[in-house]
Length: 444
Image (cartoon, rainbow, N blue to C red):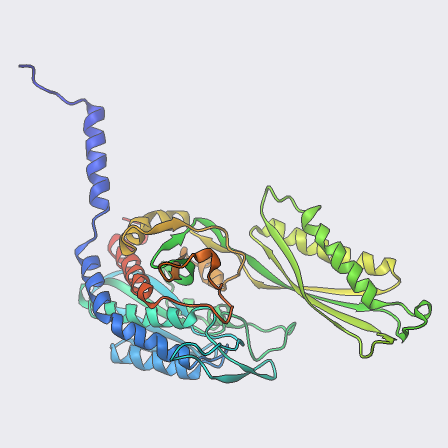
């Protein structure tokens, strides 16, 4: 009988398949983390409900910060408070030398009134840019904070076996400052934390964050490269000549001019931006002017947002918006003063880091994974990811039996979080941390 002698190609293929299979297996530490995540799940849900019931606006997260700081201290961490007003950072030092991983959760709520259908619904009120408003966790930051608190407990219980350090970043003001009026020049949130030297004292080798979104409950999704949009605040002041509404020929009407500017700005994207290169959005969300129906006012204020995913496109759209508004106003005999103020950068997911963590995220979600589409929202996680390699991924929280496409989106008062999905987020944060610490900053 002829003996079988495998070719070198076949041997290589078999070895490659064996290596791939081995790569899909969790390490002992990862398995231990998943077990600990299951054990801490009741606390995770309790924390989330407590934070949801007591939401706090940006840079006012004092109760939430205390809850977080007290928890981290109980876990024996080095804890820093008061960063960017209300931010908290906990440092967990493992029992062995190794790289440093940063995990980030945002803590702030939104000026939104909750319907009150949940037993732990918010009845909170707060001051937002000088006005008293209802407050709600309508974006899921309550879930983010609770998941990171749970992750801290999971990893703190394994510290002696961990190589390296873990930085737990509980960040304020992801939604922008509630204390500063629009257009004022001030840093907040991630930028302010970095300005105060957070990464100067201990610079991580990688940074991770998860965000809850409408999607299949417990599904993790992500993409490489551009993930969330950059955001620039747009402010336009149209100045004309005030007069009687019955004799408009004696006026220069800034209301009509504002309408012409609004229409003209639509062509910045539709006719002047190469959308095959990168998407872009220009939205005017506010127009204010006038004091009486029979008076042509002297001024009209306009405000909006510009969203892009590429820095060259971002710069071009900003220039074109300014040029269009100024020239349209000039053609009407009015004057347009245009301000384009950078707010957030594009969140860029590191390609190598995403490839390294893909098997971990697959295991954390029990195979329930997907590729995320581009997201039109913006994130100041982008500032952390611009300093070190970053990976920002999403967790679906739409209950089973409901179509995610019909679920209320983030920032909607009816936004709903299926709490059974949150343990998946804790598994994912714990898993990517362990994977990075075990393999080193170059991916092993």
